[in-house]
Image 1 (cartoon, one colour):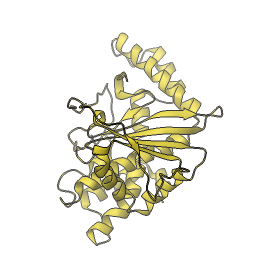
Image 2 (image 1 turned 135 degrees about the vertical axis):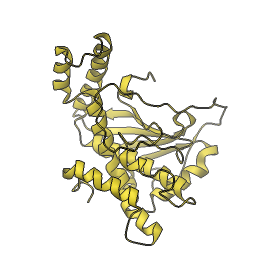
Image 3 (image 1 turned 90 degrees about the vertical axis):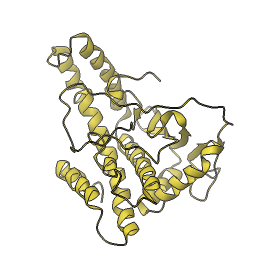
Image 4 (image 1 turned 90 degrees about the horizontal axis):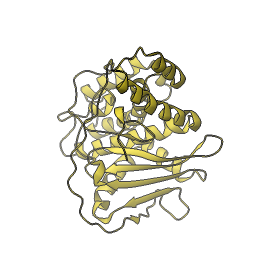
Length: 283
């Protein structure tokens, strides 16, 4: 896959960077993602379809293609996510949807991140298939607070050490399901149009000396409903709703009290102060 400016196109990556201190910073200039170094790949046996009590039967719409060497860690991450009603309802929503096929895979290429791609839409613009690829080190690494304010709040020291890896991995998985929920509600034709125009916008932006007042860029932004940076931030912030749903249920249970750890609670409060209309979505 060719990496585009702003890490856009029909795929988007949860890249891991050092957690920043500011929440919901506004990008006024070109931003870049921090790639995670990946070790050289070694030969592996072909992944096999997993079968479990929650969604990989022959009639299921969820396909889990997990290489044998990653199967144990994947089951831990998935099991942690399914400890919550939020996780189970998300999973079973796709398991029992005969009109949608979701594939879940693990790859060393994603490292500490994850990616959603393989989108397929029908003629009416309805999403009917997608693939979530998790990194083989999903249980480590913290993304930037700019696009991932909730996931970023799980930084070291905010969770008990014996569970923080699995909680982090499950939160990233929840974030990816948040993307699916958001994209499935969009008209696929508009989503694909945005992706095409973002590529054109970026090409012009670099060729015109980074002049955001270029009339051509202003016209593209009007057609897209924003700039590439603002659209990407909006998509990622919507996906963080999935992380919120998982964390607000799981962490109080984990700590045996009704309150979330303070940094995580503050991140969620800041999120809803910034996006008050989304509180209804997470209830």
